[in-house]
Image (cartoon, rainbow, N blue to C red):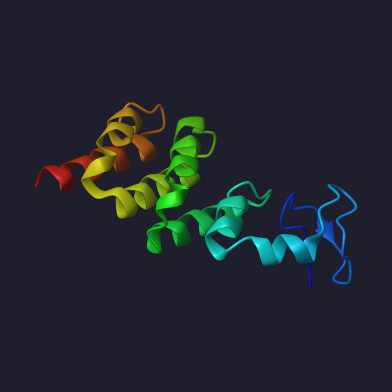
Length: 126
């Protein structure tokens, strides 16, 4: 089984207490951060599937404190699949309050992103 530092996402051995890469006390980090914080941190994970999964879960849990991070991910736009998932999560959390970011994303160069943004905007207009 693989274990990762919850702060920098470097792989560590299971028994490691202090991350050799970033110096964070792993046990203390775990006790100070709630599940939403850990999910928000996971949006920076090196593995695409983990980032997408974390964003999806944030949307399903309607984690308001994640909205600014999700908007940042949409604006970065480096991964169209992550961007689409972030748009869906923002929509799930904010509903009609997410018009600005959806309008912005509707002009994306990635058709998958612009189409998703337009679809969500159409839903809001109904």
